[in-house]
Image (cartoon, rainbow, N blue to C red; front, side):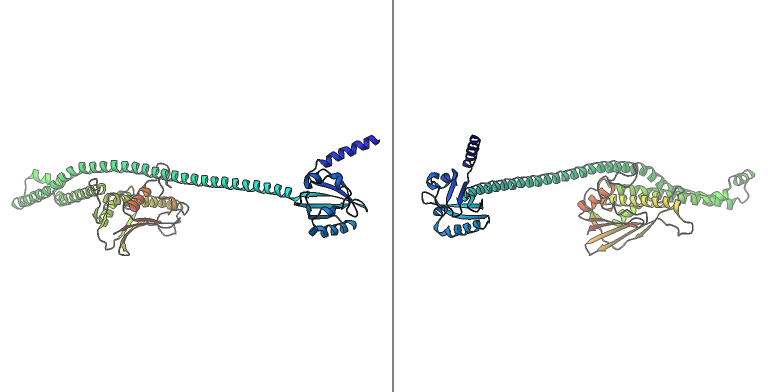
Length: 445
């Protein structure tokens, strides 16, 4: 049993001696009766020489009153924690944190921790924290910079894609318009030659007919009683009707040839393949030619005009622009108006109440001067209107609300490019569902 206790004390002593802080025991007067090896390591005094001495002897004179107060508190059973200055064997002051508690009425125990060690540990920890913070900040800065680079790269990519879409759309539309222009010009040329031939000969045919009818009247006056077979021929072929109707027939042929010549002129003016340069143009003439070109679409299958076109032209000067491109804008916007009106007609034919007001499909075209510097061309229709959710997308390339096969999504996009980029103007759309739709083409004068 005795050996077991001595072995236990030895192990306890080794454990206590391995600690960095000073472990001590003293009586109620403060005289030391136990110290571990940290006493010598921290203050330099030998343990054997120190045992029996008062702990207050090793405390700086200015702090001994604090130690006396600590002893008084310990004697009343209160635990104490206090920072005191101790003398090192070399005379250097060492700051130690004293923690003590009563073991019994006559004995106290406690520990002394070198604050400089704590400060070193805290300093190292602070340094590590500062280094970690700096590393995190650098990492965040790099991540933020990388994000900015990615955002910029993404933006640049979007710009490139938009340019690619625009270029693709321009190529498609240019090719389409070039092919259409060549086709229109070719048709106009092929029609123009025989029409001119007919138009020129109609004048002579009309004069010759008048001469022949005059001679026939003279024959009738000279020979009022023709022979029997001539009388039979007059009755069989109804000579009186032919004399009355022939003039009307030639006149209608004259009107028809004039109409064909007008259409051919409109086709040639609309295509304007030879007018790529900017020039002063009568806008009203361009609108009128476009309306003539689209006149067949204002009619139904019976040839009756279904869509009304109301023109309210103001007094405007000639405007410097690209004629073919501006005509193309008129064509695109009027085509969309006709499509919207046809859709409205189809919907109303299904749902219209017989007692409701009749729907009159109408396109209004007006021109005016704004602020003395801008020409404003307004093209309005009373079709179904454009939904508010898509109004911001109608000028995007390849965007269309029409069914597959009905639209390419390039008409308004190209129109916007022509007005905004080629003419430094504005193309504005005002519309809501089930309300009138108006496009304003504004071009600087």
